[in-house]
Image (cartoon, helix red, strand yellow):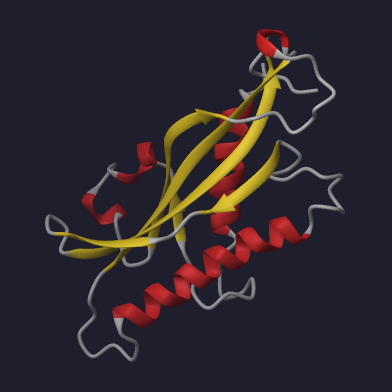
Length: 172
């Protein structure tokens, strides 16, 4: 059986963030994981390693006003928040400050999401490999991780999608 729609979207986002490489036309190269992969070994958390976390989900309004109202929608519409965490470690004698690297990575992630939005018309009005109908960047934030002695960039992304009310593995 195929993966659920939300898992397919999570896999798409992980792959999209993995596109952020110097060879792909971005300023930085990110190493990307999902949370279950992150803590396999302490060495797995390196400078500019990104982890795509799935956060809270909220109900979203349906984009098509022609469907029936109330609980009888054949589709369920949700807005799923994901947070892309990127760890930065200070490097003695580095040519770039952590702030500069954070700004570049933030812009690279925003650029990759922007590339997806720019292709919206070519993809038949759908995003994320045809799985979503809206994707929004939320304001990034920065924190210190005292356990790892790193600076952490958090880039939240909300993805709105739908699935069949009786089958979360299918969409119409």
